Image: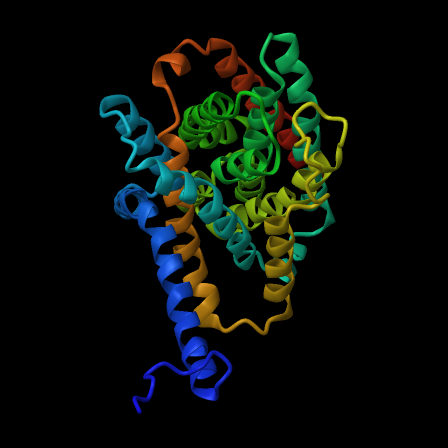
Length: 353
């Protein structure tokens, strides 16, 4: 009599065999799903490495800004192929959320609180006014609600990272074009501020302490703030004030998402506070406990910059430079918003600091 080599389905050996095969099958399925993402993710990783290299040699150019410019340059010089699109979409959405969440580890709340109520009041008022009045001005100029919102966000809070976070949290009808316009504003006026602010501070007779607060409260990108701070001897104060503005990213994004009747909130009713914003706040809270190892807090900025650069490279590949060059009204709104935050924060510095 021949004995069958196959175990009946209910035997212990058959059950063990299935339990061993299940993880392998899941890994195979996951690998199959990830495979199409490979080319785009690798390309974004190379671009992020390039952005970090440029930033190391030209500190005034943040990795985020370099990555956006690189993405736009590639997309407009060499059309992005279908092989790259899935991976670039992945980094511009999923990786972006991780980068914004990790940004919270850079914020030490006790250090921010040492700035004093006067400086915190300057930051809160200047940021709030700029964010509130910019969208109505944009609509009067004939710009879309999405473009006006993203320009307001980028100028008032923290540049490219804030633009990307707001774009991810809201469903804008002109998604890529609005983001492109806002990012161009951050690059243009934030870079101009590196030379302009110290000159104005000298003409106005501001003290070094006042310059540090004004820089942190008015300039768009952290790297641009650091460039001014390093040149003027106000690096620590300027960057700390800037991080106080970064904290406002969470409540402003949450409040915008909460506006259910807004034309740019998703119809599918997202969470009132997006999950990555919740994680951002959790990271801020964890950092504030003092329990995070020094090695982690020192490594966090580098990791965050790489992830953010990769995500913004993916976002940059959706920018049509020809449309951007025709966007004079967006540049005008960016200039107005920049003037508002500079004037408001300067008034606060003169009165309180």
